[in-house]
Length: 138
Image (cartoon, helix red, strand yellow):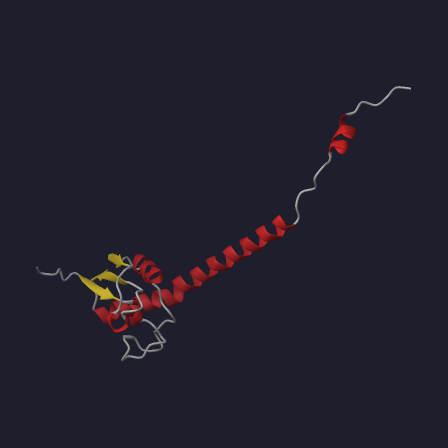
């Protein structure tokens, strides 16, 4: 069976700043990213309008125990240029946007906790009766 040669195989390890070139990093340290994820690669490929497919159950062969997955990116430019474009997109646009969303979610959670902390005042039967009791005539 012949494999279609229309996509590049891209692993998150290609971008990982914590890895050496021997361990699988493909980009120089200046362009590398700290702990990239498949989600970030997916968002970058969408923004750059590359066709892509995701395989979440795959693992990089040099780190078979780390099943981060892979993304198949459509061939439009040379592979190294594609990797550089994805890296720049992630570091300049995707990461700041995700961090901003994370901060907003944390702030919302804090607001919910503060409003839940003070329970509503409970009224007793006597209080309700006082409000609805007609006044006596003298």
